[in-house]
Figure 1 (cartoon, rainbow, N blue to C red):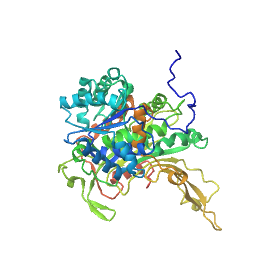
Figure 2 (cartoon, rainbow, N blue to C red):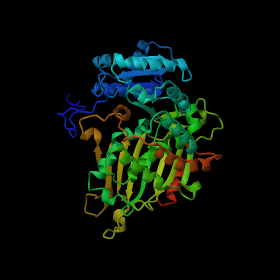
Figure 3 (tube, one colour):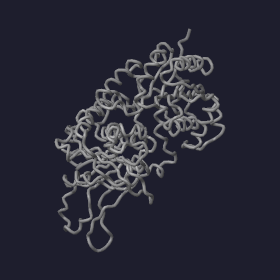
Figure 4 (cartoon, rainbow, N blue to C red):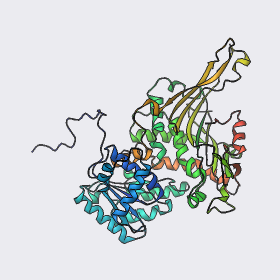
Length: 510
């Protein structure tokens, strides 16, 4: 008998014209009626279906407390897709997807509900041919992770061997609230699932401009030779939000800006900016290089000066008066939770020794923007009169993650005229103008990678623990202190500006 061929013999694996398609599988979303599922996950699933990237045997299975039949959840999902999808909404695409939408009501401590879930997945093997393949997305509060994980272990939902296919779990941030809790959660999730089946999601790593850091640095000879302490003066990584806390009061007041954003998004951007060139773009090689950076991160000796946190007061944004943090609904009047944090970090490697990395994040800032700004050292302006370069700053390379995704190169140019005067000018590259294809949403790419089993863009447990090693000392230093105040609509507290002014620098205004 001839051997079974598992791959298409006519397909060259190097051929990128045809996309990779996942195996027939189910995506089980716990918390399927929550904000994350409604605004991001369901629209991303629709976009994948619209682009033809889901297999014919795909099933979207929602799990939540609402006592809905399949039809009610399908209508909820349709409205979410129609409102939040990136691609145009087409009824025929949705009709094909809606035939594979299912819903199971139940609470996380309901044994009978998880038993029904196990039986439902078994029945889908016959009706949709999923062959035991299932990914479980924990779109739920972090406090519920252990309960759900133990339920999946009890019912065998997490067992790839028992299902005859693959089983994967997607865990949203924050992954723990400190190093010790992260280690405990890592131990639990690795015990319930295999380590290779755990996908710790950081949606910033799914953004095209973040991934473009690889191409920018390693596909060109222009930047890498000067990507070091000999030429770089400093690096600023900013994630600013113009919104407040919305409906997340309970979660946010327990978490704060440092745990919510600095520990994951900003440190991942730092690692990608500072990492060495990997030998390949495989998951393990990239993780290895990022981990080297995180292990080399050093905190400043003077945390009082170089670690600043703030809390917004009432102010004006976009012509409207907005309330202060303490006036937000369900926030305690005496809350000391920070809505802004900034810190100076060092990286003790040969490439980056002596280069400060300034990280900041905050809510109710003037605009929504995430960017990585590389500031190069100033050139000795020997041939120029002092007055000729008074308006010339540092050369800058700015990678804009969102919005207006692209890259800006800032450099000096002569001002037209009879005098020799040099001033900063900018050269812009915009994804939206350079390419005809629209940028996929981060969750779109990451959900597809989970179904394909590609862990390249997902931090592993060692990265998570190293990130907490960096953030825990900041939290201990801030414990019991009152955050600096800043008015909504400004770029944070004055102490953050003073932090850079002490080093003879200032924050870039995006």
